[in-house]
Image (cartoon, rainbow, N blue to C red; front, side):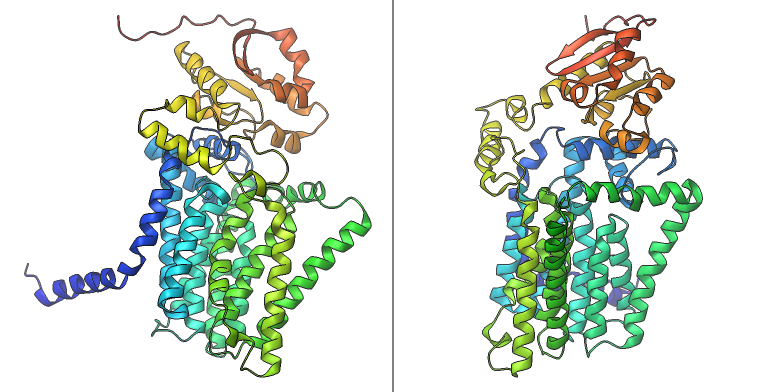
Amino acid sequence: MTTVPWRRSRAVGTVASLARRGRWAAPALALFALLRVPSFLEPNWYTDEGGAAAAARELLKGRVLYSQIWSNKPPLHLWTIALDIQAFGGSEAGLHILTLLSGGLTLGAVAYMVRPLLGGRRALGALLVVAVLLGTPVFDAELAVPESFLIAPAAWAGAVVLRRAAGVGSPSRWWPLVAGLLAAAAIAYQQTALADAGALLLVLLLSPRVSAREAILYAGTVAAVTATWLSLALITAGPSAVYFGLVGFYIPWSQSVLPASRGGLVHLAAGLGGALLLICAGAYGSRRNTAVAWGAWLWAGADLLVAASAQMPYAHFLVVSVVPVTVALFSLRPSMVLGVPVRRGLSAAAMVTGVVAAGSIARVAGVDWIPAGATGGTVPTSHNLLAYYGGTVEVLTRQRSLTSMQDTFDDRVSGDRATAAWIKSHGLSGHSAVAWSSDAWLYVLGDLPLSLPTPPIYNDEVLLGHTGQVAETVAQIDPEIIITTADALTGFPEVLPLLNSNYRVVDQESTVTVWLRDDDDLPTPQTTGP
C-alpha cells in the first residue's frame, strides 16, 4: 500500500497551524494546571462524590438506574464517574483527573471563542480569569459534581453559537448539529443545563446572521438526543421512577429552601421575573449590534438565574456561569451604550442590569475556601486558600504528612479512613452492609455492596419515607454489618431499636461505629507478610 505524501504533510501542517494559533493560550492553561495540583492530594471527603461513586459502581454491576439504583441526575453523570471506577478504582485523584480534563476542555472552548470576539488583550485577560476561577477551589470546580462536567460541553456549545452569531469564520453547514450535540451532552449531565441550551437557542433566534433552518436544526438535535436517553430510561426504569428522580425529588427540596411567607415568595419571584424580563428585552433590543456581546450577557443571565432560583448555599451552583459571565464582563465597552441609537443603548443597559440583578440573587450560593464569602455557616475554619495551597506545599516539601493535611478537610475523613482499613483487615469487604450515614464514601473505601436504593441516608429517607420506612427496609435486608455515624444517629434515630436488638459494636473510629449482626462471628484479622 502506498502513502500519499501531500495528505500526510497537509495533516501535519494543520496540526502545527493550530498549535501556533493556540500558543497565546498556553500561559492560562499552565496556570490552570498549576492551581489544580492540590486537588490530587484531597482526601475522600465530599459526600456527593462518594454517593456518585457508590452508585456508579452498582451501574457497572448491571443495576438499573432510577429503579434498582437511584440518582436525581441524568445518566451521563454516573457513567462519567464509572470511568474513574474502571480506570482508577474510584480514587479521589482519579475523579479529579476527570475534572481536570473537563476544565482543560472548557479553557479550550473559551480560547476558541474569545480571540475573535474580544481581541488579543481582552481575550487573554478573560482566559486567565477563567483559569483562576476554575483552577482554584472557590467554586468547587475540582470536585466531581455534575456542574464540573457539564461546563465543558456547555462552553463549547456556547463558543460555536456565539462565533456563528458574530459571523466569525466559515463554519460547516452542520455547525448547528455540533452545537446541539454539545448542548444535549450538558443536559445529560444535569437538568439545569436546559437553561444553557435555551439561552443559546434564543441567541440563534435573535441573531440576524442565523437562518431559521439552522436554529431548527440546533433545537431538533438537542431535543432528539435528550429524548433518546430519556426514552431508554423510561423503558428500563418506568415513568414514575424516572419522573421522581429527575423532577419529583426537587419539588419538596425546593420548597424546603424557598421563603416561608407569601410576601417572601412574591419578592423572590418578582426579582427573578424582573431580571429575566430585563435580560430578554435587552437582548432583543441589542440583537442587531455588530458585536455579539449581547449573546454572552444573555447566556450569563440564564446561568445566574438557575443558581438564583435554587437558593442553596452551594458554591458549585455558580461554576457553570463562570464562562459566560467572564466573557460578558470582558466584552463591556463604552460603545455598547455610547455612540449608538438611544434604543440600543437602553437595551444594553437593561440587559446588564438584569444580569447584575440575577447575580445579586444568586449570591446565596457563596464560595468555598474563602470563609468571608461563604454562606450557610457550614464551611470549616480550615477551608481557606492559604491552608489549601500552603498545606500542599508543606506536604510536597515533606514538612507535613499527607494524612495530617487531609484530616483538615472534614471531620469524617480520619474516621472513614480508619474504619475502611479495619473492615478490609477483618475480611469484611464484600459482605452485606448498610452505611447509616450521610457520608457515602465508606461503601467505596470499604468495598461494600450497596443494598439501599441510594448511598446517603438522607436521600433514602426522601425515597422511602420519614417515619421509619428506611429502618424497616434495613431490617428486611438484614445486613451483616451496619455502619453508623454519630450525626446520623442523632438526625435519623429510628434504626436504634434494630441495632440494640440484633447487632453489637465491634469497632469504633472517631464518630464512626461498626455494628455486626449478633449471629455472625467476627472474622480473624488478615495480616500480610511474616
